[in-house]
Each structure stands twice: as structure tokens, then as C-alpha cells.
Length: 163
Image 1 (cartoon, rainbow, N blue to C red):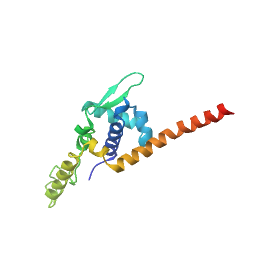
Image 2: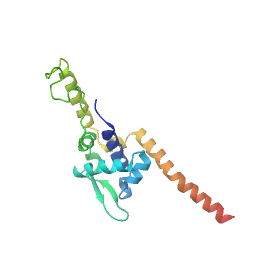
Image 3: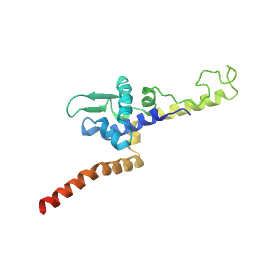
Image 4: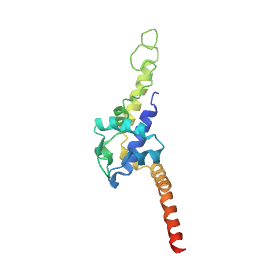
């Protein structure tokens, strides 16, 4: 299967954005920090996601990105397609020239698998992912990691003020 880092990172970043949707515009720097994805790579991905209206950008102070529509209306397959990825398990990329410039013996098998994977991913919305317990647990852990420097700083400030 040819699902590259581009598609995986796009889905991860979109899920992060969906999880923080009620908090106003989210900066790519925040997503980059939480998910361990390069900021410049996210900028490239979000330019493509914005062209497909999956995200909206807000400029200026306090700016960032928001979902282009409700999380329940954005499907994983749409995110993957928006960053020019496809889910293809054929050796020829669907060109029917797998063997000696002609279709190979198992082409239809792999094409059917590709179609099933696409159909599966096209049934899973960001909201569906958000509702998964495992996703919620990871998001809570990531929030704890983000909050740790702030908590430590507040504790240090309180100790200094009390001294």
C-alpha cells in the first residue's frame, strides 16, 4: 500500500485540529509541537487542505486554522486525497501495465483491495476518530505534556513569591 508519511501526517494534523476545534484558531506550531511534525511540512500540507476547504485560515494575532466544516463531515479518505495521496495496492498504480506493459495476473485482486480500503477510510469521519477511547487518552496525555512547562513555571513562581 502506498500511503506515505504525507497522508499519515495530514490525518494526524487534522485530527489534532478537530480535537482542539472549540478553542479558536489553532496554530500550526501548536500542532507541530503536540504531534512531532515539522512546522514547514505542516505548512505545505495545510496549503493543500485549505485548497480543498477542509480547513480555514485566520490571519493576524490569535490566528491559526480551524476546520472547514464539522468534524463529522470530514472523512479520512478526503484528507488523504487532499494532499495528493491515494490508497493504491496495485504494483502499477492502477495503470494496468503491471507486467510487460499489460495487466498482471493479480491486478484485479489488488485493485479490489484498494477500493475496499478507500471505502473504509471514506466511512470514518474525524468525529468518529475523536470518539475513540484510545484517541481521547492520547490527546489527554499530549495535553498533559503541553501543560507540564506551564505547571512547572507556575509552581516555581509560587515558590519564589512565597520565599
